[in-house]
Length: 385
Ligand SMILES: *Cc1c(COP(=O)(O)O)cnc(C)c1O
Image (cartoon, rainbow, N blue to C red):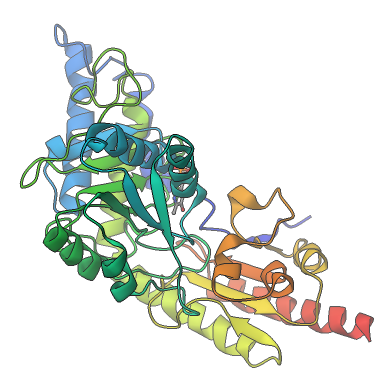
């Protein structure tokens, strides 16, 4: 049996064979501990880590010493949010974030709320974008952190990072962004965007799972963080634990490839996405979720009226691998907190489909996926009559 067409690239992506090739020697040949400074095994591993650190730093216009390797974006978000909260609580206990954030931001914030911090969850417009005036009005004298994601993992919406950064700088508040979906897809520049903390992950960018990083600004202003994992003092005391060279080298390679191919690949995916979008939106009762223009080139998210959400996903399953809502919440039956935040009904939120195209998606894949989606919607509607 043919496997379904994979269109769930916001959940994860396959490892690019070129990334795997770069990783392989670090499992066997260069197996040393990068912290071992007294022999060549350690130096070889450290050389691979150093190179990856430089590539990742350069990709976001940071310095290598500002990159802290973590197990992924979830850990990076936890370190950023809880680390700032613990380091700055004497200056204030108010944090601002957004209702449509990934749970890896929302849940650490809710945890801090349970400890007595005050969290403002900004609402978004129908387009999924935050309102900068509301953000400005929400910043108080006791606000210590603003956390706004770069690109949404469900609807692909791109928040105005540069404007948010400028505002946070003017108000003297730290700015963290979860850029798990954005790295290698859109240009990121921590200087131009006034970003103090940025969470990254490799597995949404054809790198391995289980590796990510937090960018922590070191100069004007230096950001202080309380580490969340204590031990051997790796990563400048911010994240203890033996570094994992194969994953780190793979992460570096994935970022290098992502950046080198960002423009051509972005244009290719945008064309495929737009073709799918045009065809699907021609159907009656099919709505686009998230802003038309301010979105990732590889994301399409629609809500379908007049069909049952579960039946829809079941009908798509044999031919295309997509999800309704995010991968992390698809276990639960609750409608997506992101789609409902756009003002959509629970029924429409449940009957939503997220298409995430990627490096290995072809035009034929998209045509087959769209045809099958249209047939499925029509037959489900017919069955209801
Ligand atoms: C996938 C994702 C995460 C979680 O990243 P992991 O590396 O899997 O922990 C966090 N935020 C966003 C926006 C994501 O898309």
